[in-house]
Length: 337
Image (cartoon, rainbow, N blue to C red; front, top):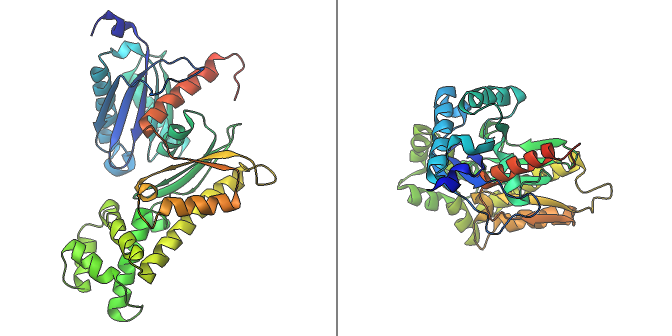
């Protein structure tokens, strides 16, 4: 690339999830109006950067690698970076933010603005084009609901992992299905199509073999991968599968409602307008039994002013737009929300 790209100022947005980490490099856009589609100069993908899962050293290496590769892909130098925003899973406390800021400070010159957020915040920003306002619901392997008011207050619900009850998540749905199979097998619960369908999908011949399969590698994503089997059984009229999905819908909707209520996002009368951004495989599946649509209906019954958004851009782009938004607030004298 020519000298023009060397002089261009850029921002980096990072989405660090439990399975992969994505970094995008974008030009410093004018704040007034974003072009459509958004210009992404470079993109790179690496492994897990959740330091709770892989440890601090691996997380740090992954973040440094993914940012360096995105810059290389964009053909710009590190000196062109104006701001970096990282949305990382496992960042739940100011001490986590300080730790990661410490790593980044050594990687970038002191004038570069650095922002660290939970990955749910980047997912919210991917639906609101960088504005921290409203509520995001993520339902993939795990689930979390996270919200912000325009004056900066925040609240979260669920997101405490499978042991502490993310029952609307992919893991929660699949775990309930496995429990139903074991209950049917030993006579504690009603018979269900889930038994034959789950065994068939895993290549097992008896529910007894499920015990070995489950504990051989109890990774959350491996268990969550059974969600499509539960959905197809519910679509074929299995009552137990149907009940599991209805419970999941209720749990996901309750987590959104808890955040909306705590932050009063719908105003005093509960009818005010606010964005609800919905992200994750559990919500996005285009099935007859559509979990995302059911959750949407439940939210709208309680909060008719909710504006449900399915993001058109990925969370890493949301993180980059957040960096732009934060920069704008710092640039404008006295700031404004």
